[in-house]
Amino acid sequence: MATAPQPQLPLFYKDLLPLNSRDHGDWKVNSFADASFLESTHAIPLTVDEFVDAQRNYPIVFTAGDNPLPIALMGLNEGVNTYMDAEGKLEAGVYVPAYIRRYPFILAKLNKDSDDMSLCFDPQAGVLGKSDEGQALFADDKPTEYTEGVLEFCRRFEESGQRTKAFVEELKKLDILMDGEIAITRNDMPDTPFVYRGFQMVDENKLRELSAEQVETLNKNGMGMLIHAQLFSMNLMRMLFERQSAQGKVPTQNAGTPAVPNGSV
Image 1 (cartoon, rainbow, N blue to C red):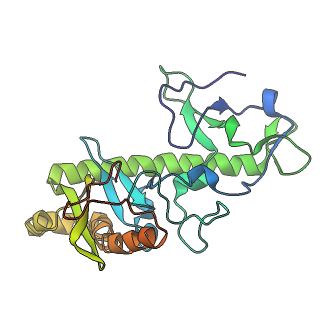
Image 2: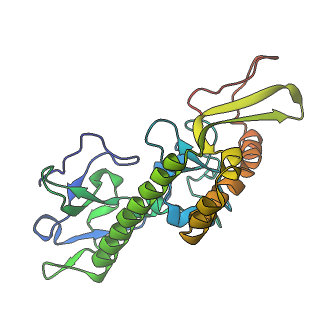
Image 3: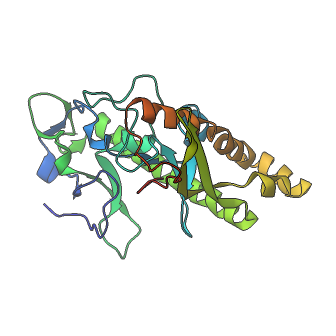
């Protein structure tokens, strides 16, 4: 079976294979028994189409660097996911980002010289294979309704990704992104704040300085709502810290020394 090009695999994916009826005609896919594949992931890629839903549960920030992308924070430190229970399952009732729901499938280019993308999967996910149970992937050498649905979901995800890139490019043009820094203190340690850096966020001051024409344009094209969703979500940083603290997952720090946790956002 041919392996898709993978110079750098995306988050979660350990390998990629193109799905085809020749090699996988009698394969089926089963549901994940748990969500252990994301239990050590504190930040999940997010698309702009998810901002309104995601901001109810997670702080939304942008990655650092020249090519920022939005992420939903499930923890404030690398390796910490506060939304996982002891059985490796995601907390019920919270929004599940599309990036998680897409796994183990993905659209990927098989030929670096072509823009064509093929439906691929991670064979190490452990949910696809020859089995008596599960959803059939092919019938009479043709994709089943389930597989067509997966393909359509992945297509919509890619389209949403393009809208997300366009959104971020517009934020950069307006110059309203700033390096973020959040200082949080615990009641039992009021003089030793935990300081989190290494991310970007919308600069409220620069947002207020935009011209009336720029603000009107943002409101008309829907970007204004997305920007405010990101800003509102920052109110959850304290909540996320408290979740992490209650679970005993906040790094220790020396008294009197602000904490800049290793591998934070």
